[in-house]
Image (cartoon, rainbow, N blue to C red; front, side, top):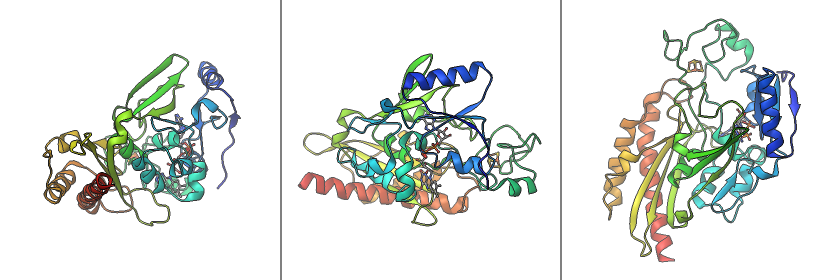
Length: 334
Ligand SMILES: Cc1cc2nc3c(=O)[nH]c(=O)nc-3n(C[C@H](O)[C@H](O)[C@H](O)COP(=O)(O)OP(=O)(O)OC[C@H]3O[C@@H](n4cnc5c(N)ncnc54)[C@H](O)[C@@H]3O)c2cc1C
Ligand code: SF4
């Protein structure tokens, strides 16, 4: 499989990168950002919506860096895994992504902006041509969605990034920049329930970093993942759970977020609101598991069937809560 030809732009500052994006737009040229390329380049090789211009942000220093409260979009996943200052929940989720080789290239920004996936799409051009394509990449045929047919509007491809639920459980916000200025929002508001648009990024806009609240040092959590092969596979489902502690070690609030079940990662405010303050962990873990299973809506477009993924949502939620409660106990004892 050959990578299609594109013109590569290599800015060294954020201002220059945003300027190139603006200029390309004004000239009517489509482009993609590229950071590690571990998602974009395989998609290009498969002929999935390649663009004539690619802007590499790997040389932009403003987008780098890892601190307890800020992780740059260009932070490499393996650097996050090895970071002594990143929150343990982020480190844990990053450590489950792909393989060490891929994590050395892959970045936080690329992980959040990961393209959605579907077994009708993540195939070679020849394979997709043989089934007359699908709506997300239809080669001008007007092909319908193969998962939910007869609507030709919505793509329900699955979001399978691992970092988002962990960051959501820490109440992280995402920061964006374009030549029009900057803006930020809670991470859960960044994603859009459409497998084609995926998120709220506008023309020429880029993710610059995520911000993690200072109080996250008193948050303990766990991320649990279902995948086909432990060696490197995408999540068929992932659940993060976190507990915020007061100064005396009492749990004061909870967060739960999932990935791999739908077109967006989702924060489950409504489910955790009902957890009692001095929780009986075993009872709450069982109950939350059942409620999460009801809440997620997987479709038939990844490796495992939806019924199994739904069932595993409850198992992952229970495991994440049980693991978080163990860590909470040991954090408080040490
Ligand atoms: C074999 C294999 C296994 C994998 N397993 C996993 C897994 O288990 N879990 C997982 O989460 N991922 C997995 N991945 C996907 C990928 O490696 C990671 O998600 C990685 O973090 C993507 O980052 P990147 O920098 O390489 O992104 P890129 O490929 O550079 O970009 C990905 C997308 O994000 C856009 N983008 C990149 N940076 C920015 C930015 N700063 N602002 C706006 N848009 C941006 C690009 O335009 C592109 O659309 C796997 C990939 C492979 C090949
Ligand atoms: S969900 Fe439908 S439109 Fe989207 S990639 Fe799959 S088959 Fe194509």
